[in-house]
Image (cartoon, rainbow, N blue to C red):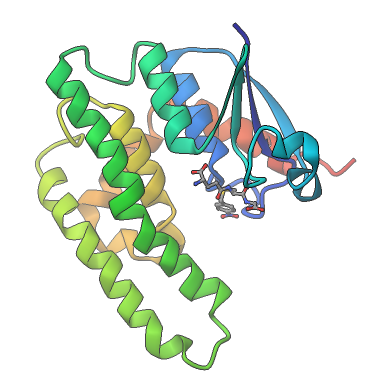
Length: 215
Ligand code: GTB
């Protein structure tokens, strides 16, 4: 069955791969499934045709036959369940890999998103300078348990899994802040993720979209 995902017509990051379609592209590349990308403008995100796929009017979405999904976590989980390559076959190892997906999205990503808001969206507020170190401190505290886990291991739990795909994707969003570089074992972990051929294909595909000449 053919797979179609949505992505920004032009991502605000200019092709750094930080928009969430990259996570879905990466998952599909890891499991070797071909996919089509429908590019959507910011305006089209809030129009009825797109809202029928995504109630919050965002990217990415995922269509496969009758199935329509939104939320990157749900999409990557679905891809990992349906196609081999992203989850171990052993039931307990599989459950642990899924746990790491949730940990990435619900424990590690929230303070990182908050940091993005503090640095950029709230950067001009009078209280911003005072608040920023607090938010940076919360991010660093969240990273410490990952450092102990990844200083002697390539991946979070045995072989690379959907848990690593999600954790690397989440940590990548830290790079512009400079905090990732403060944790060499995490920077090396992210670099291992980025070195995977499937990641490179996903990254290059989104880069091509975001650097093509304007029509
Ligand atoms: N929880 C949802 C998921 O995981 O799928 C969140 C989806 C989401 O935030 N989508 C964003 C979106 O569609 C794009 S990825 N925003 C438009 C809107 O809400 O109207 C977030 C994103 C955007 C831009 C950058 N960047 O430029 O660096 C990074 C990440």
